[in-house]
Length: 398
Image (cartoon, rainbow, N blue to C red; front, side, top):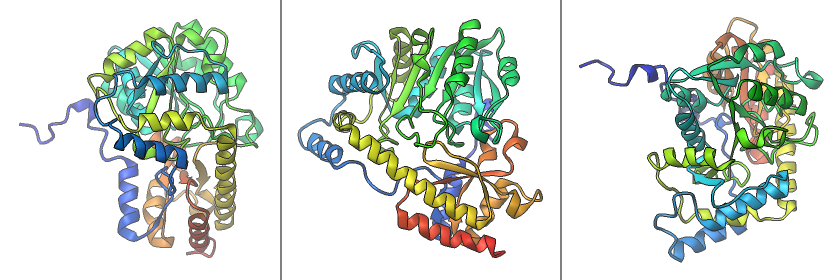
């Protein structure tokens, strides 16, 4: 018997950084700006609908692809905001959060040895899902300062070099966690051209679709809306971020029937179904008026600005965040090159009672992100203000 029974390909994946840093926050009594979950509940109409569904018998298995009311609302939502036309019966599947949709897509589309082009830093489940499928990551680095208006960007030559005869799919997250980058139409056009040149699918993680701020270089553009991409793109989103219900784990995948069927055939052997009494509530939330979405975004943008001010005054070099829940900061002005982001984040709770996440754990090429850390601003204003007050100790040499 081996000391570690875990299959070899998964041994590089230990406890996630989110689990580690959240436990550190609890142990030290620190403010947790590491993990991206809100500290307020979602819209009252949605919560009331969930309570009603619990009382009125929606507690058994829902249909495998999701309840009809939710699938219909998802298609209406995509038409309303992005002009995408979907058949709710064949082109939508409801999943246990976006994470399951991503995993099921990769497991269903990739054979061992197939290659997946993605951008680093990446959400950590991407690497795990690619590894589970026996596929190969081809990461392309996003770097601060080289994109439009000095924002995060990538080198075109590096992206072109990542594609090859074994490229099966591109895994794209925009708006992007952890950098806050929103991919421009020019960047998306290049990705679309390469997908078509190499006959690759695209899987797009768009869970922050409604959290693109007014000072972003460009608004959000779904890759599926670009010429030639409608029939080769699987679009993934969820209720968790838009409606402040991350614990509900209600996500979905939309796209051509063949791609959606691929996700559904894998999903049935992962969770089968999920969140029976919560699906009707998400259907209600997706039908909320435009004012909900604009006010929600404005509130997050104001909290971003509040945190950015505090981080700047503490001595960080803050990178522009165009969307999502997150902002990244360069620790070099405070720590020089003698300490990396992981050590800095592990020391931060003792120094000033705040928890952040090192972004280097989201890279294959760790050196690219060793000086960057991520803060979440999806918290109440008073929590952000208290975190800023504590972080001010760093400017004073604390």
